Image (cartoon, rainbow, N blue to C red; front, side):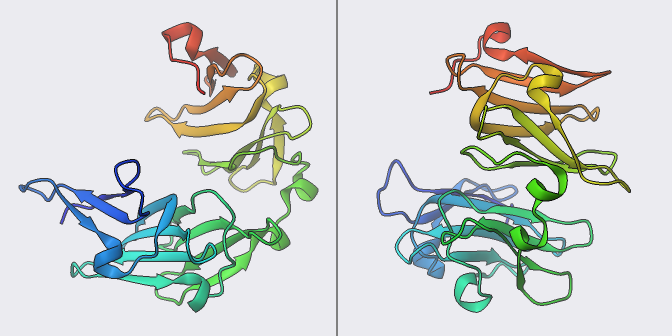
Length: 256
């Protein structure tokens, strides 16, 4: 089976079922209700997916009728679907609003990052290559606000990135003034940060942020402005950091 994309059935259905729509290689488009087939709990739409090195497709979802439990629905290389309640089996805290964020590391570790609904702590649930599922409270282990001076974050999920040179980091919005802030760890270096609004003129935002790394290695930070009518901006690293208003430049509609 070609690895499909996981989506919630909304807006065509209001029951919160998780549904896979996929195109098998050489076949025709098809769709499967994973709630009916594997018992995946209903969700409000907070879904992410990734593929492990062994070919297993993992779909992580936040339950909307079970208090926010994290579920992992997975399709192994043999083509068999199953679902595991990670809150019940691993101890992952019930999740606050927002989609779980799935990842795969170079060493084969697969996992997901969520927010603890009780205290807002960032929690990582992960499966080391050849190991067992486990979890860690990342707020307790790595508070970047205290370590690297990252400002307290405004609304919206942090936007993580990995640059070709091995630099890993995250982009957030300062809750005090809306400045876009990048916190990063250079390969072999120390955590540090930069105010991209001051450095590159990135407009202030309420927290709508995304990252993309182009094939040529250029890092793009996309933001939605909070004081310019919702214009989309692209802040990018060429010979130096710069920002372009994509709404003004290419006519991208302002975001609602």
